[in-house]
Length: 163
Length: 287
Ligand SMILES: Cc1cc2nc3c(=O)[nH]c(=O)nc-3n(C[C@H](O)[C@H](O)[C@H](O)COP(=O)(O)OP(=O)(O)OC[C@H]3O[C@@H](n4cnc5c(N)ncnc54)[C@H](O)[C@@H]3O)c2cc1C
Ligand code: FES
Ligand code: FES
Image (spheres, rainbow over the protein chains, first blue to last red):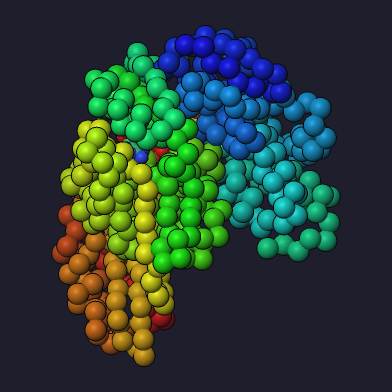
């Protein structure tokens, strides 16, 4: 079947099997390799993409279901200022070890940071950790991810009281 | 790739009538809402699916509405929408607490409340609070629409009162004055996990007397369950440590847990007592 959606701001049309998951369409047909294959059952988050700006797992999403919608991966955020700042802090905090979880971890973190910056509410530490709990990191970089996110928020939301 | 979905057909109806028609007509068809249960089941061949009818584009299945005397939740409403809804946090704090304990942000952005109920896992987290609230489920099928009380919805292990071509349309929860509530979910870790046991308690206490109390649990029986016997022991009684302990003990006799990958029957029974006592203590203000 033919499915059309926006991928990183660009309209794409692909012929897919009705039972094809977005993870396979992205990696095997559209050559988007930042989206990783892990558990294939929603547990690890390595296959996270943003669907209309919200993080979802592409292993439990049929490509047919994203007809007409906006799919974003890290490839589509290269020009985004907030994204650049966040990646910079990930690097400075050494929040990437083997890197397998990294594109997805950065995507979820980005969606979260964008949301709280727009809502001008400074999250608590536990709220930050809860936001990324669906992203498994076997290298255990969580404290560094927390540091990277916190630094961006300190800069973007100075003086906002913590909830 | 490790998993492969079987060859399936995919339909995306725009109306409820169309969806019911497809379910009636297409052999081996099933509803897909968020897909977070059914795609895992189809990948692992736990459930046989030949066609999926996607209800995600049917507008009347979405959204949360304050009807004045009740809250209406469309079956295909995402869990994350429940979490962000002021109608839910103001009127149904027990449901909100349960949803907050569920899965991860990614999964909550996909999973629906109706999917959680229709999948009818014994561990479903929206079930205990909705059982406690005595929610009404509006079901639509070839014969029209009917209302099923949630206390009659779960008919056995992963089985519901839904007919083959029936769709859960919405969940109605009547507003009532509750003075206390509590949801306690014990898992193998703190977050992002299914329960070993979870307990939901809703209470109305006036002048130290229990006017009404509802107790519901998951992962302790083939379906999520109400603990009617324990509720009856407390109704009309004065709040006291002894009364709470007796009721929590009664819950141990009402449940029928099993051993599985997450825990043992013995531990679940012990925890049914412990968690019920804690939840009652909090909800009845007996601290
Ligand atoms: C990683 C992970 C973590 C999870 N954690 C939790 C958790 O903590 N607690 C918990 O309770 N669950 C959890 N789940 C299970 C699942 O996410 C929930 O049960 C979810 O709410 C299912 O909703 P869905 O829309 O994705 O259902 P789907 O998979 O789309 O459907 C589930 C079943 O219900 C039927 N169905 C769906 N909607 C309707 C309808 N309106 N009418 C009739 N039939 C319908 C489908 O045919 C199917 O049989 C988890 C799942 C994953 C993958
Ligand atoms: S591969 Fe999708 S969550 Fe693990
Ligand atoms: S950096 Fe290795 S899995 Fe996260």
